[in-house]
Length: 130
Image (cartoon, rainbow, N blue to C red):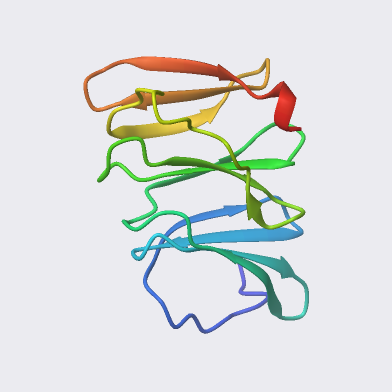
């Protein structure tokens, strides 16, 4: 193994996701930086929708959506449109009871799956936001 590119990071990142062309870095302040990967890392968007550590970053199978969550706050789950670099608005709604999310991801059928600290697993359809 050899290092191909080495980038200096100036923040304490807690989660990393990449698809080869795009890199998402979540930090302790709840910010997700979306960057393109080439000769250098170029940030094209910073999503600031959470206020606690980003503890999970996963994408759906077509790579269009990214789910971020924090296990330190109630209902702290957000969907990010990767190409636009923005949070998908209108979800979760106020009465969505997720609890303290510990793990999030997408199923083979492209449903959002969220597990919480009480052992509950919830599935949400995301076809309307693709």
